[in-house]
Length: 98
Image (cartoon, rainbow, N blue to C red):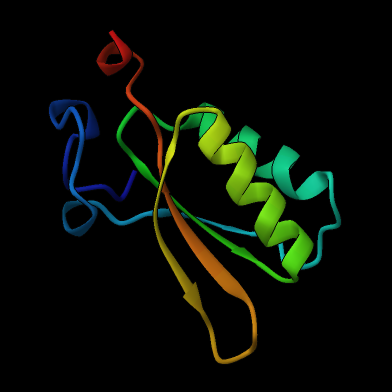
C-alpha cells in the first residue's frame, strides 16, 4: 500500500486529513450509479471519504438521496469544468449511531 498513515488509527478522519477514495461513474446510468457507489462505500472503513464523480441531474439526485438515506454524510458537492459533479461522501460510523 502507498498509504503513509494507518487508517485504523484514525476513528473519523477530517476531510483535510485523508485523501478521498475516487470513483468515476460518469458513464454509468441509474440504477448502476448508486450500485457502484454503494459497493465502494461497503469496502471503506467508517469515517473514510469517497469522492464520486458523476454526470447528470438524475444520477446526482439519486446518489445523493440514497447515500443520505443510508446515514452517510455528503460533505461537499462541486461542479467541475466539464459539467460533471463530484460528491464527497463520508462513510458513517455505525458505533456513533448509538
